[in-house]
Image (cartoon, rainbow, N blue to C red):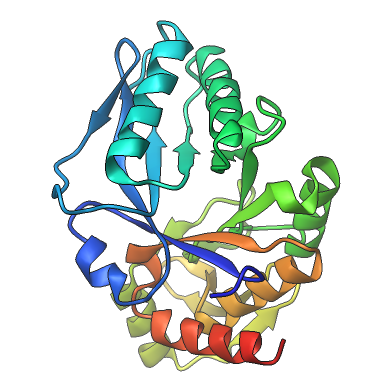
Length: 267
């Protein structure tokens, strides 16, 4: 990939070898913040080197000081040859996560290494790149990304590409759907043979159907085409970085990457 298209695959432990064939940088989802705080690592082969480190905050109690933890992260990056860090901080475990994001952002920036953080912590660091999830149940993806780019700047805005497959009952006052597995979605497409439409606002495919037992359903889903469109919308706004969870898109990668190569060959 050229620097015009910065795609990263987020891979859980055990999937790195399979994901390598895609030829994209890998972000290893093998780390979390534990008590102390300290950096905890899942089992990962010693031979795994390069790419980025992904840290989540599952179970973190929000206690401690940020500086020792930030330096633990730097030492692990040096030992593994990591070129950046993704902080998947989903919890609300107090202000310490913000201080960690600020500290890591400064330390990594000095070394020319990127830090990506979830949107909740986008204001914690002036240099961190802010991950905007692409899954929507309402509104406009273009508007969502445009607002983020205006707030953080396009170079500090990145996508976290979520492959949508959800079943919404209609009406849906909460906007929350029931996730569908690939097999469940495929079964419905085969059994119902519905007319499938594309929502330019949500940037996803959808169809509706009626069930005698449960009433009206609205099925929203992504495929390679809709994910390509999300990347195109981002690029049109100057946003080039995108992280794709490997286990969500592994079956779509050949088509996605072929399109990326054709796109870059035209530049």
